[in-house]
Amino acid sequence: MPSLVKFYIRHALIGFAISAVFVAGLIWQDVMGLGHLMTRNADGILAAGMLWFFLGTIFGGAQTGIALFLMHEDEDRDDDDDDPHGGQRIPVHVPVEAPRRRHL
Image (cartoon, rainbow, N blue to C red; front, side, top):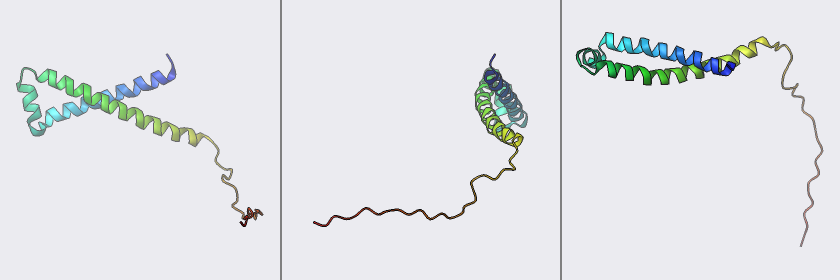
């Protein structure tokens, strides 16, 4: 399996794990009566599963994006940045000829 696919699956699973903890916290804290509705209703398990899945897609995407941005910073740390970048900014005079105007 390509490393990019492994990277995406790993971070998507992390996002779904975060989603499971988040949904469990919502039910346990009974935020706005959500825990009461899900535990006392016959379709509460379906609602909790749908909430977990959709929040998992959001958290998985966010986790993957964060990992991508942080991966770029990790690669920069490995390089030796002792060399100056961007030059010395010494002004240089470059002669430029202006186009001549034609008089009618």
